[in-house]
Length: 390
Ligand code: GLV
Image (cartoon, rainbow, N blue to C red; front, side, top):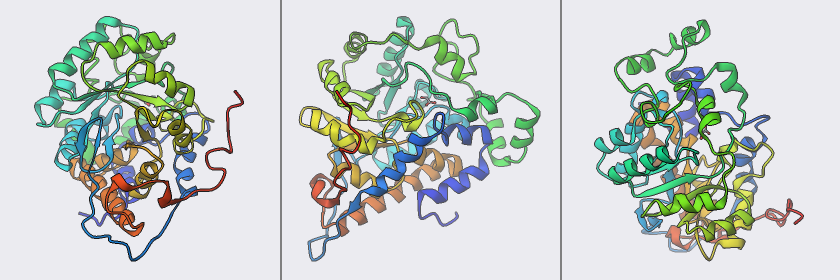
């Protein structure tokens, strides 16, 4: 195994091993990708406060997210098409997460189905749904997730419309990939990936194909979103979805304090401060910059998680120090999966864990539960530079 010391190492291997179409799908933001870039670069504006001669022995990164014990405040975010990044990708990632002791979230847009992931894992995983128009399909998804004993439902609330990612259009993204001279030429150079794909039957959207009605092109993410997603979504509808699920509900994609306050009224157990990894509204502020405003609005009333931009344990530390109960990583585990399958996801988690644990110690803290803003040096205008006028 190559020496992997940081998430960037996994990304380099991932780029070499996976067809361009799927690498580009993961590694893009919408339009100009400004928000995608700033999600990560804004973490650099926060500095860690180094302390010495404080007890750094017996450290623990353990905590809870929606009442469930986690080995560190990190969950695997729902990522679409991961079974195209590596054969049987969702099963591999779910297994790595379960062994590590962090939650895995299965995307509705996964290749392996809910039932398939449940059959190949022991620990309950989280299941993610979009806000779709079709009640029957939604109810069936909820029932299937219940049957599979999923321990939390993540409702993505920031995707009424799909943001435009130029590269997906140019590449003609689909699952399985459409065979064009360019895609064939590129896939021929990805031998390990191709052998894996030839050895599995899981090459279609497993939760959708054969389950959703009236889908014109079941291999296309963009045509399915255009047809099935509820553009007229409102809070009453979100409340209805909440009422269909008995266990914890996490609303993912809240970036504004006003929306965070609304989320309290629908009975969510947690919200994820997120701009969908910069894949939706390009020009929106980074999640880490919005986190302080969200914490001020609802932080004492509801559990807040943060997603978008996390590539290291230092990033996790910063989000937790600003008040997040936990974080979600998306690209970081996808790089690991594409690079080395299950072992790569495990390596991504190990890298982030080590960075979090060591940085926490060097900040003079022994438990992630004790991290707070006093562990950071924060630019004076970090949370106030951009403010809504009303
Ligand atoms: C789906 O949620 C995507 O961002 O592609």
